[in-house]
Length: 640
Ligand code: ADP
Image (cartoon, rainbow, N blue to C red):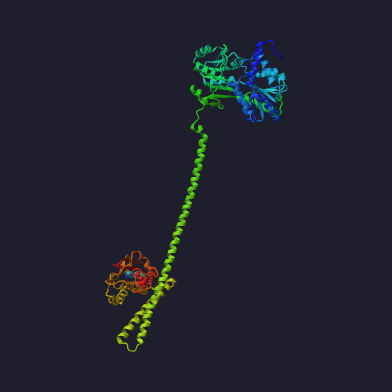
């Protein structure tokens, strides 16, 4: 190729474009985070060669900022980035200039720019880039495989004479969109297709025309093509209410105005209230949607082919295929036209969807649920642990209480035994001293008969006291060893009671006490089966205590039938017993230390023996007493 140096315009254009294209070239390595600028391109190239990375030239037909191209680039980046591939991205900007001179100048620029770079693959987007490469590639980049994408109206003939070329072409499914329009708007009688006079625009009309015959007269199609903005607006606003619009491609007006996709869709929307469908992915700009071809998918698919080539596959062995298509809709616009999601194809992508609170915050909700579940589990576990700790501490408290009680009991028992032994020693020594002492006095020759009589009496009472003690000790040990038996016999109660009264009357009188016997039996000959000796022993213990602990007043002995039992009572007007001690006095060795002075004889066994004897005969024993007022000792026996 030679530059037509005689063409001044071309030279100026050449200088201008050289500056522009250097400025519009992005060279960056996908394995480095920093993109290299044009100023250090050669450094990058050298570095790249040293690293033995793959070099891929990306040649876009249009300019950076053109939404379609940017989205193809997005697809390319998503596949080729971070794979040790250095991308040399160039934008041919053919929306603004696309004549032969321009392409020749581009050739010169690329030749100069990449004279030191060996590319492993070239990826082209849209028609101009592919055409340019088919024309100049073997001189610019000999032998380098080319992968194209975004090609309208592709026909295999187009690359028939070229080796090392493969790619993906834009596929359209206009018929599916038209059928969907018929389904969603059954009353629609015409579909207005708007497009411009560009190659793409005209190609689109041809495509629609090819499928029009398949519509079977469901509605007619109006082609509103290549009009200036004002006229286009008028045509759109005059459409009947039984129409819908298909936004074909309307980005260039015959009077030279250029619109972005976004601007064009917004213009269309402002010109008509009718539903607008699309074939290209301009969903989100104000159209309902349709079965669309998506530039991102095309970029991705072409990049996958590039990857295979970089791995060693030959381009001619990779089949040329169509780009993927999807049904895509904008929920906001669907709602405007009262179209429900259920009427759309099942696999549709729906943007701007009103997600339920659950869908919107699905992750947060699940995280919160999981956290709450974990917290609940922790709380349950902790409460179980607490319960266990509580029950353990209760057991420990109980054990401690029981231990304290047992300790108290042991100490009490020890104290009682010490007390008993001291008392026993006193109880043995006192009568023994009496017996021995008065026996010695009896030995004196010159004692008077009165004194002799007195000493004998004292020896007798001391012996009696001694005998009582020994009897008590024997009884308690027989009871303890469970060897005591009952000798049941028929006894006359009146006789027993009268004898007891007679027996104790002298001792009571001697102490100045009034002893009475109240016979409440009514029947003097009342007899019952019991152990007379034990009955007398119990009454003896109670009456002796009453005499012992009563300084003045009276003692009453009584017996009566109550609730089918015999009820015995020994009542005195003595010193009484503290409420707290009334149960304890029936324990062995227990004496009421606060009221009992050492001068009053007693081993602390009498009531314990009496209780055992009563229980042995299936009766009950108890006391009611008040300090300084007196005591009532009672016991019951069954009538047998
Ligand atoms: P003791 O041989 O000491 O009398 P008991 O077992 O018969 O032994 O009596 C135990 C204690 O009960 C007595 O030491 C006394 O403190 C108290 N007691 C018993 N009977 C009476 C009573 N009628 N009046 C006051 N206290 C009594």
